[in-house]
Image (cartoon, rainbow, N blue to C red; front, side, top):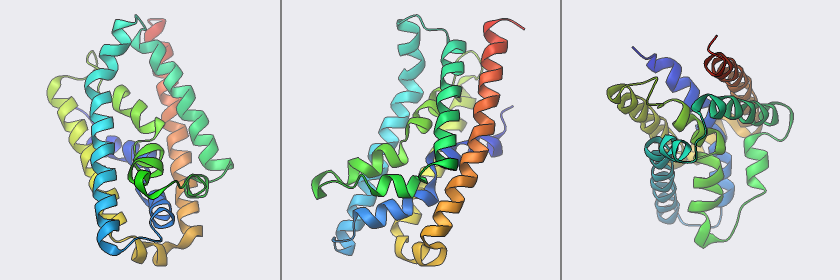
Length: 202
């Protein structure tokens, strides 16, 4: 039986819905409300497709190139840990990604869908939390549904972006991003230890 609350917290940390709000606001400043809604929907759809691809194909690709999942789990844990450290000590997610705002035609894709919503950490989580040898099909479906629920939260927050931003401000988003980084670092260490245990059959 999987812990749906733990999975929710994990995906909430790596996707960071609240940290996406300032990125969305900065990326869509010059658009009308109707266009902002279209950008929000498009970015969520693209993010969902990317993450579902990693849920379905991530492990298959690793198997095809003969990389054991335990090695990927260790490497993934290290990457997640470094990503978490950057959230804690470096620029927060909003600060870092606001700097990446691009032309209007690509706004929904970059920086919103990638790397803000479907972040490297989220892609990694999609693979690690749906491993075939650890989770059966129904558990993988449940995990995917939890992931979709987090994406729904992102969509709601983007649609209510102006109000949310007024409520928490840039400082609030930065603080929450760093707290999520701390949670994510703990998850990353747990993945590294689990991968080492599996690899060495401890």
